[in-house]
Length: 220
Image (cartoon, rainbow, N blue to C red; front, side, top):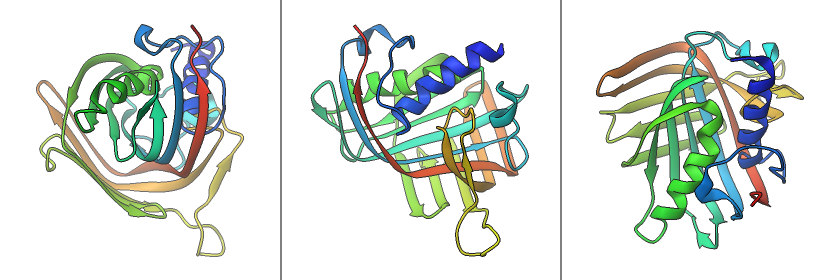
Protein backbone atom coordinates (compact mmCIF):
# COMPACT_ATOMS: atom_id res chain seq x y z
CA UNK A 1 0.00 0.00 0.00
CA UNK A 2 1.36 3.41 -0.94
CA UNK A 3 2.04 6.01 1.77
CA UNK A 4 -0.75 8.36 0.66
CA UNK A 5 -3.29 5.55 0.60
CA UNK A 6 -2.32 4.49 4.11
CA UNK A 7 -2.71 7.99 5.52
CA UNK A 8 -6.20 8.28 3.99
CA UNK A 9 -7.10 4.97 5.58
CA UNK A 10 -5.49 5.84 8.89
CA UNK A 11 -7.44 9.09 9.13
CA UNK A 12 -10.65 7.31 8.20
CA UNK A 13 -10.24 4.81 11.03
CA UNK A 14 -9.06 7.38 13.55
CA UNK A 15 -12.25 9.37 13.04
CA UNK A 16 -14.31 6.51 14.37
CA UNK A 17 -11.81 5.68 17.07
CA UNK A 18 -12.09 9.00 18.83
CA UNK A 19 -9.35 11.17 17.31
CA UNK A 20 -11.28 13.50 14.97
CA UNK A 21 -14.75 14.83 14.25
CA UNK A 22 -15.10 14.98 10.46
CA UNK A 23 -14.70 12.56 7.62
CA UNK A 24 -14.64 14.97 4.72
CA UNK A 25 -12.78 13.52 1.75
CA UNK A 26 -12.56 10.01 3.20
CA UNK A 27 -14.30 7.25 1.19
CA UNK A 28 -16.85 5.30 3.21
CA UNK A 29 -19.36 2.54 2.38
CA UNK A 30 -22.47 3.78 0.59
CA UNK A 31 -24.79 2.69 3.41
CA UNK A 32 -22.93 5.01 5.81
CA UNK A 33 -23.20 8.14 3.68
CA UNK A 34 -25.06 10.98 5.41
CA UNK A 35 -25.21 9.11 8.71
CA UNK A 36 -24.56 10.72 12.09
CA UNK A 37 -22.40 8.83 14.55
CA UNK A 38 -21.22 9.08 18.14
CA UNK A 39 -18.92 6.43 19.59
CA UNK A 40 -17.68 6.06 23.16
CA UNK A 41 -15.77 3.10 24.54
CA UNK A 42 -12.53 1.19 24.09
CA UNK A 43 -10.41 0.21 21.11
CA UNK A 44 -7.78 -2.54 21.39
CA UNK A 45 -5.63 -4.11 18.70
CA UNK A 46 -2.88 -6.67 18.42
CA UNK A 47 -0.60 -7.21 15.43
CA UNK A 48 2.38 -9.29 14.30
CA UNK A 49 4.88 -6.40 14.52
CA UNK A 50 7.44 -5.98 17.28
CA UNK A 51 6.80 -3.43 20.05
CA UNK A 52 6.29 -0.68 19.01
CA UNK A 53 4.67 -1.34 15.65
CA UNK A 54 6.88 0.23 12.92
CA UNK A 55 3.83 0.77 10.71
CA UNK A 56 2.90 3.75 12.89
CA UNK A 57 6.18 5.45 12.09
CA UNK A 58 6.78 4.29 8.51
CA UNK A 59 3.36 5.43 7.27
CA UNK A 60 2.66 2.11 5.56
CA UNK A 61 1.54 -1.36 6.52
CA UNK A 62 4.33 -3.88 7.05
CA UNK A 63 4.09 -6.89 4.78
CA UNK A 64 2.69 -9.79 6.75
CA UNK A 65 1.20 -7.60 9.49
CA UNK A 66 -1.62 -9.85 10.67
CA UNK A 67 -3.84 -8.03 13.13
CA UNK A 68 -6.94 -8.18 15.31
CA UNK A 69 -8.81 -5.05 16.40
CA UNK A 70 -11.92 -4.57 18.50
CA UNK A 71 -14.19 -1.61 19.22
CA UNK A 72 -16.30 -2.12 22.36
CA UNK A 73 -18.96 0.57 22.73
CA UNK A 74 -20.16 1.69 26.15
CA UNK A 75 -22.46 4.23 24.51
CA UNK A 76 -23.03 5.82 21.14
CA UNK A 77 -25.33 6.06 18.16
CA UNK A 78 -25.13 5.50 14.44
CA UNK A 79 -27.77 6.89 12.09
CA UNK A 80 -30.00 7.47 15.10
CA UNK A 81 -29.70 3.94 16.51
CA UNK A 82 -28.41 3.51 20.07
CA UNK A 83 -25.37 1.18 20.08
CA UNK A 84 -24.47 0.85 23.77
CA UNK A 85 -23.04 -2.62 24.37
CA UNK A 86 -22.32 -3.40 20.72
CA UNK A 87 -18.92 -4.88 19.86
CA UNK A 88 -17.21 -4.72 16.45
CA UNK A 89 -14.11 -6.71 15.54
CA UNK A 90 -11.85 -7.13 12.52
CA UNK A 91 -9.10 -9.66 11.84
CA UNK A 92 -6.88 -9.98 8.83
CA UNK A 93 -3.76 -8.96 6.96
CA UNK A 94 -3.41 -5.18 7.22
CA UNK A 95 -3.63 -3.43 3.86
CA UNK A 96 -4.76 -6.64 2.17
CA UNK A 97 -7.82 -8.48 3.52
CA UNK A 98 -9.96 -8.46 6.65
CA UNK A 99 -13.00 -10.23 8.05
CA UNK A 100 -15.49 -8.36 10.22
CA UNK A 101 -17.55 -9.66 13.15
CA UNK A 102 -20.47 -7.87 14.84
CA UNK A 103 -22.04 -8.56 18.24
CA UNK A 104 -25.20 -6.49 18.65
CA UNK A 105 -28.83 -7.01 19.57
CA UNK A 106 -31.53 -7.30 16.92
CA UNK A 107 -32.47 -3.62 17.10
CA UNK A 108 -28.84 -2.54 16.69
CA UNK A 109 -27.77 -5.07 14.08
CA UNK A 110 -28.16 -3.10 10.86
CA UNK A 111 -26.61 0.10 12.21
CA UNK A 112 -23.77 -1.73 13.99
CA UNK A 113 -22.90 -3.63 10.82
CA UNK A 114 -22.80 -0.43 8.75
CA UNK A 115 -20.61 1.22 11.39
CA UNK A 116 -18.23 -1.76 11.43
CA UNK A 117 -17.82 -1.62 7.65
CA UNK A 118 -17.04 2.09 7.80
CA UNK A 119 -14.72 1.82 10.80
CA UNK A 120 -12.63 -1.02 9.41
CA UNK A 121 -12.64 -0.25 5.67
CA UNK A 122 -9.16 1.30 5.95
CA UNK A 123 -7.63 -1.95 7.18
CA UNK A 124 -8.09 -3.84 3.92
CA UNK A 125 -10.57 -5.41 1.53
CA UNK A 126 -13.52 -6.75 3.53
CA UNK A 127 -13.91 -10.42 2.62
CA UNK A 128 -16.84 -11.21 4.88
CA UNK A 129 -19.07 -9.70 7.56
CA UNK A 130 -21.05 -11.85 9.98
CA UNK A 131 -22.74 -11.87 13.36
CA UNK A 132 -20.75 -13.47 16.16
CA UNK A 133 -20.53 -13.78 19.93
CA UNK A 134 -17.75 -11.42 21.02
CA UNK A 135 -16.45 -11.39 24.59
CA UNK A 136 -14.39 -8.43 25.80
CA UNK A 137 -13.07 -7.94 29.33
CA UNK A 138 -10.30 -6.17 31.23
CA UNK A 139 -8.97 -2.65 31.75
CA UNK A 140 -5.85 -0.48 31.59
CA UNK A 141 -4.23 -2.47 28.79
CA UNK A 142 -4.91 -5.93 30.24
CA UNK A 143 -7.61 -7.29 27.98
CA UNK A 144 -9.03 -10.61 26.86
CA UNK A 145 -11.01 -10.92 23.64
CA UNK A 146 -12.74 -13.95 22.15
CA UNK A 147 -15.01 -14.56 19.18
CA UNK A 148 -17.36 -17.54 19.39
CA UNK A 149 -15.79 -18.71 22.67
CA UNK A 150 -12.30 -18.65 21.19
CA UNK A 151 -13.09 -20.82 18.18
CA UNK A 152 -12.51 -17.88 15.80
CA UNK A 153 -10.48 -15.36 17.83
CA UNK A 154 -8.71 -15.44 21.16
CA UNK A 155 -6.42 -12.60 22.28
CA UNK A 156 -4.86 -11.45 25.56
CA UNK A 157 -2.83 -8.25 26.05
CA UNK A 158 -0.88 -6.46 28.77
CA UNK A 159 0.30 -2.83 29.07
CA UNK A 160 3.89 -1.77 28.43
CA UNK A 161 4.67 0.51 31.37
CA UNK A 162 6.78 3.65 31.29
CA UNK A 163 9.64 4.65 33.54
CA UNK A 164 7.31 5.12 36.51
CA UNK A 165 6.30 1.45 36.20
CA UNK A 166 2.71 2.52 36.84
CA UNK A 167 1.27 3.93 33.61
CA UNK A 168 1.52 2.72 29.99
CA UNK A 169 3.80 4.41 27.48
CA UNK A 170 1.84 6.84 25.30
CA UNK A 171 2.51 7.18 21.57
CA UNK A 172 1.40 10.64 20.46
CA UNK A 173 1.23 12.37 17.08
CA UNK A 174 1.83 9.17 15.13
CA UNK A 175 0.34 8.34 11.70
CA UNK A 176 -1.52 5.32 13.02
CA UNK A 177 -4.79 3.77 11.97
CA UNK A 178 -5.52 3.60 15.71
CA UNK A 179 -5.51 7.38 16.09
CA UNK A 180 -2.90 10.05 16.71
CA UNK A 181 -2.49 9.12 20.38
CA UNK A 182 -2.60 5.54 21.71
CA UNK A 183 -1.23 3.65 24.69
CA UNK A 184 1.33 0.93 24.23
CA UNK A 185 0.63 -2.66 25.12
CA UNK A 186 1.82 -6.14 24.16
CA UNK A 187 -0.10 -9.05 22.69
CA UNK A 188 0.71 -11.93 25.01
CA UNK A 189 -0.93 -14.45 22.69
CA UNK A 190 -3.60 -14.40 20.00
CA UNK A 191 -5.06 -16.72 17.40
CA UNK A 192 -7.46 -16.39 14.46
CA UNK A 193 -9.10 -19.24 12.55
CA UNK A 194 -11.99 -18.87 10.13
CA UNK A 195 -12.29 -21.18 7.14
CA UNK A 196 -9.20 -20.88 4.95
CA UNK A 197 -7.78 -17.93 6.92
CA UNK A 198 -5.69 -18.36 10.07
CA UNK A 199 -2.75 -16.87 11.95
CA UNK A 200 -1.23 -16.64 15.43
CA UNK A 201 0.40 -13.81 17.38
CA UNK A 202 2.69 -14.07 20.39
CA UNK A 203 4.69 -11.50 22.37
CA UNK A 204 4.01 -8.89 19.68
CA UNK A 205 2.64 -5.36 19.41
CA UNK A 206 -0.64 -4.09 20.85
CA UNK A 207 -2.11 -0.63 21.36
CA UNK A 208 -5.28 0.55 23.06
CA UNK A 209 -7.45 3.61 23.52
CA UNK A 210 -9.82 3.31 26.47
CA UNK A 211 -10.99 6.92 26.07
CA UNK A 212 -12.55 6.66 22.63
CA UNK A 213 -15.07 9.50 22.31
CA UNK A 214 -16.05 11.02 18.99
CA UNK A 215 -19.04 12.30 17.06
CA UNK A 216 -19.61 13.55 13.52
CA UNK A 217 -21.37 12.92 10.26
CA UNK A 218 -20.35 11.00 7.17
CA UNK A 219 -20.42 13.05 3.94
CA UNK A 220 -23.37 12.51 1.62
